[in-house]
Picture 1 (cartoon, rainbow, N blue to C red):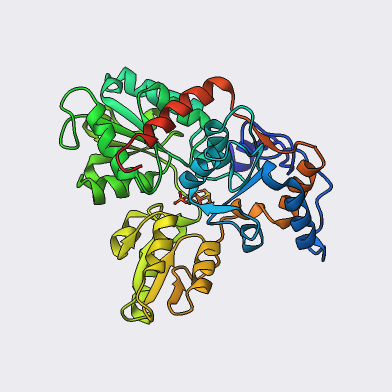
Picture 2: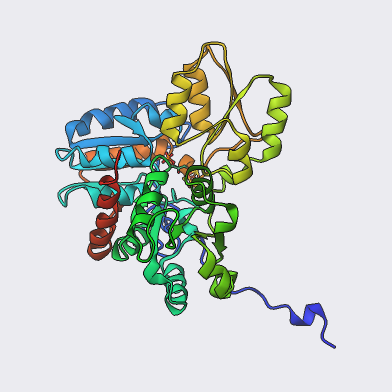
Amino acid sequence: MSTLLENFREPAPSPLLLLGQGRDLNSERGVECPGDLPAPSDPDLVERARAARAALGQKAFVLGHHYQRDEVIDFADVTGDSFKLAREAAARPEAEYIVFCGVHFMAESADILTSDAQQVVLPDLAAGCSMADMAEIGQVEEAWAVLQDLGVAGDTIPVTYMNSSAAIKAFTGRHGGTVCTSSNAEVALRWAFDQVGGTKGVDGTGKVLFLPDQHLGRNTAVQKLGLSLDDCVVFDPRKPDGGLTAQELSDARVILWRGHCSVHGRFSEQNVTDIRAQVPGVNVLVHPECKHEVVTAADHVGSTEYIIRTLDAAEPGSSWAVGTELNLVRRVAREHPDLQVHYLDKTVCFCSTMNRIDLPHLVWAMESLAAGRMVNRIVVDADDAHWARVALDQMLALPGS
Ligand code: 13P
Ligand code: SF4
């Protein structure tokens, strides 16, 4: 009889992850170190950032997602959620350089929505998104083939969250679907159900394939559209046929991709129970990337823009527990000393990839551009850009977008 040890095989060596310039197409992460980043301890860093920003003037436009560090947000010309930032980039045709302080999929969307004369720069190519990495285009094509073999692809509309690669957005464009963000997911899902063959509408017979965040898809389908949890199935790309039977796939109304956010996935229902016990009357406010039991237990659910708007409009003296990325929560708490703002999770909860963009990387990128040296440019290939644009334009045409 063989022992466990005899059966053991060394895993195949994986390529080392080096950070900085260049691009690893498989992981969207940087593969080459630029080597000349200023040290974070450089006392002249802020001055260098100011000088580089001034030297670039109108040639550059700096965008900052709400999850960016304060030191980076200080240099952003505009802040916003992923969709607002893509729109802002598209609305600045005079800017030759769009410096995107956010993550890779956001910079890709900016490249798709801006003109060919504009160049989008991501200060650190290692700023990916673990959720976007959970849906790889080959896996999605295979999942679609499963639906085709089952004869249900014709009645299925793909909808992808903004947090996905350009290739996945292009897939949805090619198959008559759309992109959505956390602020328009309900409208996007209703629109998708109206497009399918057979009996249309949320109460009809069509299906939606929702990529890549199972939580946003489930929360929207159940809380906003009134579908049941049983109407949703989870397609696991690592299992044959997604780990689902033909019957389960045929009966489902929403096929959720097995992806999640590694930050928002950490909040638990227990966090909500604990904070309610500790802070009587607290309002619990969370992002829809949180698990279903967390959003069900919360009082308010919405995108980063919604979270900021809600706290801006809150009654002075009221108490809030917020479940989203920590940079955003700390900043809003500081801006509202009249509110009691708590962080929903006890442990630190930064988005590690958002945090990769720091002042040294921003200084390096801006100084390089000011010296006429292009670095870390994000370019989406023409075919993907075309079809991803179709899906993004479809989103822009949704009512209320
Ligand atoms: P928003 O579009 O709500 O800003 O969210 C982006 C994101 O990455 C949330 O984790
Ligand atoms: Fe991606 Fe989550 Fe970070 Fe947002 S918070 S960029 S979804 S890993």
